[in-house]
Length: 221
Image 1 (cartoon, rainbow, N blue to C red):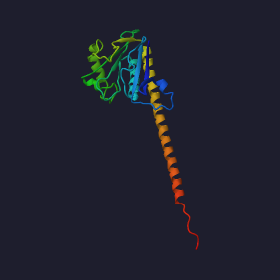
Image 2: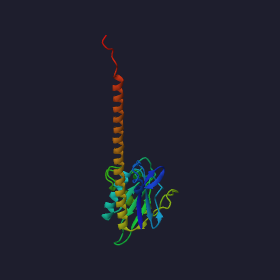
Image 3: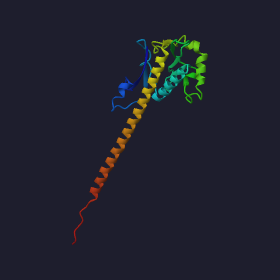
C-alpha cells in the first residue's frame, strides 16, 4: 500500500495541504512544500527536504501519471531551483504483466543532470535527454544511493502497486492545483481589500480637506 500526500509550510511546520487550505485566513506559501510517501507503513520522504515550488510539483506529477499510464518510466525532481544536492524520484512500471512498479530515490550530484527537470524548457529543451541519462546510469541508480545521513530510509527499488501509484500521483497533482487556485484567490482578495482600504482613506482625506477649506467671510460693512 502506498499513500502520497502534499504538505505545506505553515509557521515553520509541515501541515497536510488538505488541513492548511481549510483556514481561510491563512496565506498559502506556494514556493515551499514537502511530500509524504508512506509505503507499507514506512514514511520515506516527509520532512527530509523542502521540495520547493508547488506549480512544478503539480506539472511533474501530471507528467508522471501520463508516462506511467502509457507504460513508461517517470521522474519527479525536487522543485527547488537554487540548490545542487536535490532528490529525484524514479518511478518504474512493472517489468512483467501483473508485476509491481518500483520507486527509487537518487541524486545526480556532479553531473549535468542535477539541473534537469523531466519537463520541457526546464534545464532541457526536450526531457528525453534526462530519461536517456537515467537509462544509461540505471544500474548505479537502482543498486546504491550516495551516502547521505538525510536520506533515511533510502529508497532503492521499493515495490508498489502500479494502479495505486498512478492514483496517488494523480491525487497529488489535484491537491497541488487546488492549493495554487486557492492561493491565487486569496491573493486577489487581499489585493481587492487593499484597494478598498486605500479608497476609503482617500475619501476620508478628501472630506477632511473639504471641511478645512470652509471659512467664514466678513459681512458687508
